[in-house]
Image 1 (cartoon, helix red, strand yellow):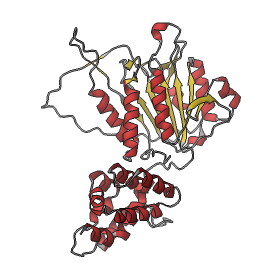
Image 2 (tube, one colour; image 1 turned 90 degrees about the horizontal axis):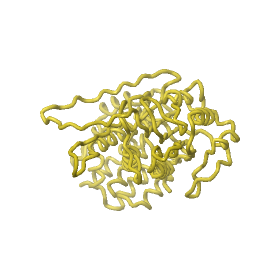
Image 3 (cartoon, helix red, strand yellow; image 1 turned 135 degrees about the horizontal axis):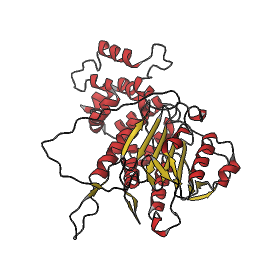
Image 4 (cartoon, helix red, strand yellow; image 1 turned 30 degrees about the vertical axis):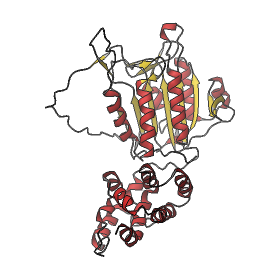
Length: 399
């Protein structure tokens, strides 16, 4: 019966899924309906034609006899949110029309532009940032470890840098890193990275490039792609990060170097900043939750200004509190972030969904409790500065 349902609805399924071929490919891989070898083979098709990918994927699942599991995937809640027209598909064996002409027409009118060049182009695709450049973009890591006084050394930050490098290189980014930057160095290197015109200046900042499983001195001027990521690992104060000279730089000054006015190459493209730095000196206490109290849903507020649009700033902690870091395993926030990126990107989740998972993961952890004290400290990351205008979905590389 499942075989007949897939065959009967094959053309409609292919048309619907072609709107976001990568998502359904990731989903069937997650459910282990295809092998890693199958995934890599199909992923190469996606670079050329999404419709061809979906056709071959459906044929492959029929050949494997996985029709029943495939239908279960297509009825998954997240999948239905991504492809709302799947809700109209009839999976029964009555032979009735898979999608009524009126409901398909209404759905098409909502999701297709009247002059769209491709019949399967949907609003869902238009709502996502296109990330097709190779590399996807630059991921810059500013890694401040040594601040003069041994007591101020940020032990464990190398682990964070390694984790970020591993994750973002796997997502197709060109990873660059500079270490132990003063406040003026941070200001300078951000301006140089925004312009990308001065190779000698970037080399003077000791910027290195991840290549062949190691960092080497930058030898060729990098170029901006379809996205930009900046990870700052340092000490800090509220809305500030610290240079190794203990002078402060406003986070807003760093992000503004990449706005539409100062960095036209990234206009309309997503710019994401991850800040692993204390935002104060207090430790955040933990309180017992009354089960009778229910939190209200979070409402996103996305201001959209021409030159300041398409930004996301995610911090290890809310204001006034310390960001906790283990001297060997690294920062609580960064390690959770990398773990959730690995999981979420394979599931086709957008960055905001992933950061909610990070918030939940970190918030559940208790710190400081020992056999000598019952005091529990907590950490609460935040991503309050959000001006993204589309969904941002990073996809793992095929190799």
